[in-house]
Length: 290
Image (cartoon, rainbow, N blue to C red):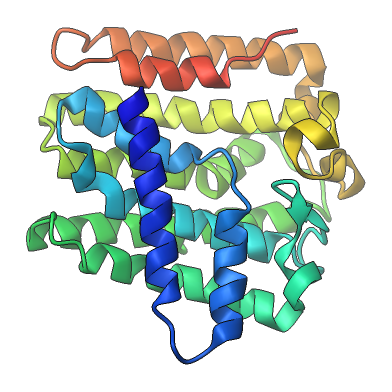
């Protein structure tokens, strides 16, 4: 997996280099770069790159796409941490953007990351124009009203009234799952995957999106600030319905294990068509147990 690690380093450098190309506002430059350099798991870029590796396609062809989705994810975290949203003061082990630069600058830094994510893809000489159009269509659809934004709104509305398990699944399908599914879908476009492989990988990505959220809900209960790099217990304090609040801790683990096995079965069904090891590694990194 060293090639993926090297590509992740290249992706981060691509983001920072692009953001430094701003001679108009030093403040926006610093605020935007601050949240990128704070680190994080880089889960979504890893999903893009791991899918390309599984397809046997050169990883550098996915660098701009991986950069773009990390920029969008980071912008969403900046806005999510604002007082009007979750009002958090710690993210990735560092003070949140608005605690360092103020609310107005944090809002603009998030806006900047969202907007510039598209420009990173457009300026990629490794991608053919038809692929750029398809990739951006997938990226913006899943980041916008048909994906993350609507999921976030449903999540906020769910804080003021009880929601059903189906509604909980719908929230996370859009809020968290949309961008994770986009990672695989975009990589399949770049890597020229067959329709059959793309369909199976999309099913795998759907399960991974739910796994990621269940894991996050569990860790919000059982982990600590040092391990997570953010405040814990915020779901309960914000009256959010989670997999733990609905299923109990043990039940949430059981849900996780069932979906984990389903995702693995999807991969095994195409192991003669692609190299599934990089995508199995994604699942193994997510694995948690009682």
